[in-house]
Length: 190
Image (cartoon, rainbow, N blue to C red):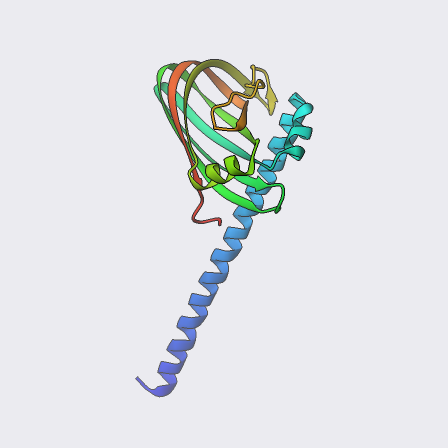
């Protein structure tokens, strides 16, 4: 290989590698923007259902919003993404969510979850440890972005020192189940 050929090979390799890095960063920024938009859209739906939530979110140390998609027939699973927002610092932590359940259940739905933290410590623990375990039963339905069923607007305390709300955006689920849910930081988006 001549010096010129080696030089051109090195330049071409560096160009491809740099383009890949820039492409990955652009893809990351696009995905982050999608999660932020989805979060804002979900917040508006929660506020429409329960206007008092807007004040609770503003006064809280922080909040988290997730959009999940799931299906169940005795055994169920759901997954999605979202973010935890620190109201004091303005920092967003991009997160993932997965849920597994078993019980008398059937359906498929797109669900939005809002968690309002009552303390900075609760938010920190959620972001860094992110585990919730719970069970229960519900019948929820939604279509075309309109919630028809009964959201958990009572704010069940299923995460320590936080309020937990859900809305079914699309789909239908019915039954009762024991479910385990895991929230964790997204390695790709943070």
